[in-house]
Amino acid sequence: MSGLIVESALLTHGLVSTDNGRILNVWDPDWLIGWMDRGRPVAADVEEFLFFRGRADEAVRIGYSAYDKAKSGGATGALTASGTIRLCEERGAEIAVSCGIGGLTAGQGIEKSNDLAALAHTDISLAATAFKDMFDQYYTVQAALTAGISVYSMNATWHPGYMFSGPAGKGGAPEIPFSDEMHKGALYLNPISSDEMLSDMSIIETAVEYGKEEALQGRAFHPAVNAKIDELTGGRSSELQLLALADNVRKVKRMLETRK
Image (cartoon, rainbow, N blue to C red):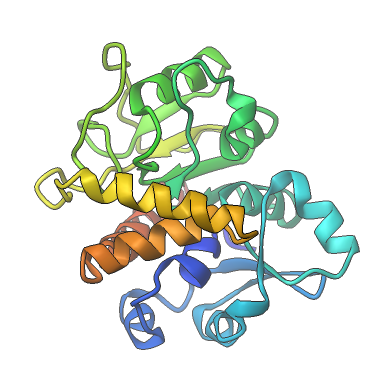
């Protein structure tokens, strides 16, 4: 088993204007992606995944807490970051690789973030770009540290934000040390370059409201938000996320290979 498994939720439901050819163009054949097919956990290469992606309409989103029930119930679904942590536990992989992950707003405990809640109770590590833009970046990092989760930057310097260069949140910037070594149960952040980030925060506000409306209709919130941001940025957000995810995988591969 590879030392890493990449989450499939973004690749399945989040990149609405990205076709399979573009994914193949940036993906290495040995990068494994995780999902669940009729109750069968899968960690396979990109070509096999793209067949699954063609059935995206029948796939639910599966996180850590829902994983075992989904498996026993024969569900088909894309794995979120936390769901991929659970697959890593099963398969003996050391680190799950994601892009944007769930965070917190000021005052919330880490149980409100499925990804942080999973990290707090596992030896599996998680590499991500950042917490999604609707969350308080500074507060979320501090809450993770307070909960005993080690947080590292995969860049020499760390700056907050996911796709947008808006406000970082309340409170001062927490100290996030650089590390290119593997640590158990740690969170690694690898932000998009600040000069490539989007700047119009009104897009986030519009997308979040759209996501809430979709959720009231029984549809998934985060894919709806991603779809609206993609529409409002002319596909730029999908390209940013695809490239960021690939960069996360490359840096994790280097960490694993250097250690060996």
